[in-house]
Image (cartoon, rainbow, N blue to C red; front, side, top):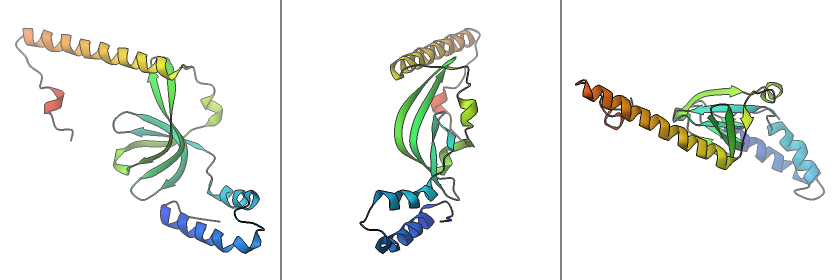
Length: 161
């Protein structure tokens, strides 16, 4: 089966698979399903960087002209220093306007990373500590500028665009 990425062509191919039903002894037999669904699988992992800074890693199942994505077996990867943690997210639908970067992951090079994988609880705690440290440093910077008679507009009062 040859299909263009996207929901409509995928549904058309699944409808064609239903026409094969009489060829199989019982429906749905695992051998028939597996042989037909192999054509839908993309064995490469993809990394998606989102506009809000999150990093998703999963198997790309669908993409359309607006860069809307469907990722399967998705994990959210959190990096803090030389450590990282993966939070399982399952099937993830991403609206195209939130995609900053989409790239294929080389599985051979992924295992050679100098980063250390840690538990979810540990990486979330380190992320919280890092965010708190950045917030305190920002407060000190604002106070130092204020002492010199300068002011910086707060980030929540600025437009995102």
